[in-house]
Length: 429
Image (tube, rainbow, N blue to C red; front, side):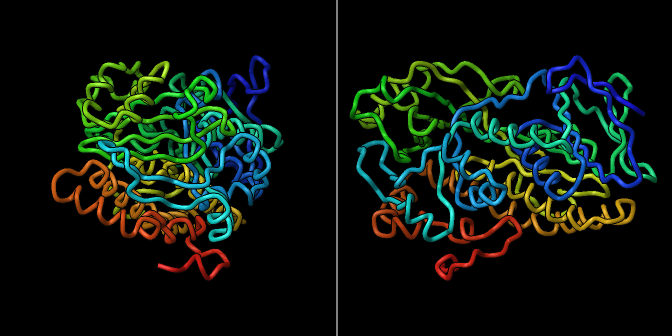
């Protein structure tokens, strides 16, 4: 059935062309970073792609984001390296400090060392800039059709493919459905019928400020992490270094409405949570003009490839594996998912027979790596917020083995398909 939806390109509506037996069509639920990355990867694989975003505009809520070389390497491979270099910052180092004393505990060299070791840079940028970069890339491709005000309500498997439905009764049929609709995914709910994501007990307060509005002592072009009891703080440059992104993560009770995840954050709550910490950290927090509050939610680490694909339906990014941000890999894993999905879809010749097998291969390639990142991020959160003997041991280990502990070759040195890059140094433990 033909479907009408508002078009990204500005017309009042866009008529969905009927399917052709010779056309491989991918339907994507969602319009965020993972969805657009999937659209680009599928289009590069030779598929016609239809993206359905529930909002009335393509935009990305949030502030800063970190991308390791495992993700920036894929963006470069898609021809987006130059665009990334225009909006991102590329810090020379990551410094871990004690929140109580301000003393450095350990550091990780980034910059040229990261590029030399892993073949791609470590980047920090605004989520909106990454989203805009991907949006510009897919909107210039004739095989990608972007639709707004189109929340996916459900789907039905048919002998010919998969049929997606909206609340008003309209339907559209394709060969594959990709659920990239985020933490509260409607596609996941139907595929897995599991419980919703649960709050972690951690609250993230985020702020952005122009570096020119900060005192010289508070400006920074590197990644800084402060660790304290039941808390940690991260800051790094975004917008090509012009702005500073600050994230304060505290233990706390979540707001009542978890799905409305963007709330106004109260500076007084943050100051109370950071009471007694070092003057430099308190000065940075006090210099922020405004705060937004996010309740961090998660699911347990994946335990099966069935959690990523079933028949003609695949899950991607937060819809499949939401994770704590303590390894800075949420967006990176979504980009890796998209790249692997594109590789698997490129081999589909007969959609009727080949799609389920291609998606099974996608799930087998991705689920264990995603589970490992989820588990490591969970463990990092416990270490970051440690108290007592664990905190003492953590600080001592960072002082003695900082570079070795902070580097993650198994993560940065692999592509989304799990193969290592062509550098012997990438395989060192």
